[in-house]
Amino acid sequence: MDKDKIENLFNVSQAAYILKVHPLTIRRYIRDGRLKAIKVGGNVRIKESQLAEFNKDFAPRIPQMKIRGSEQKVPAKIFSEADPFFQLQGRGAALNL
Image (cartoon, rainbow, N blue to C red; front, side, top):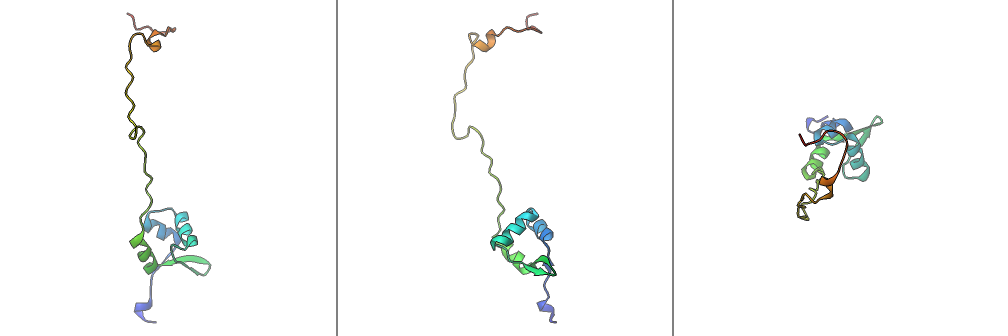
């Protein structure tokens, strides 16, 4: 066997660690045909060259957090002593000393 023909094979967990994704994501990529894999002895293996090729174009989805209120500016409400909130009467500690 020629040394140039020998290639490393990674299992699903190793590939997931390299790409920084969950192993189920790797299995989904394989099922969808986005990542090529082979079965060796009943186990799924990914060739190093295939993983390197996939990694060139790979960009993990980073969830974009929407900042609430960034799209629409709502003017702040100005409170006064006539506001019902300040007219509440309750039992317990009082602010009047």
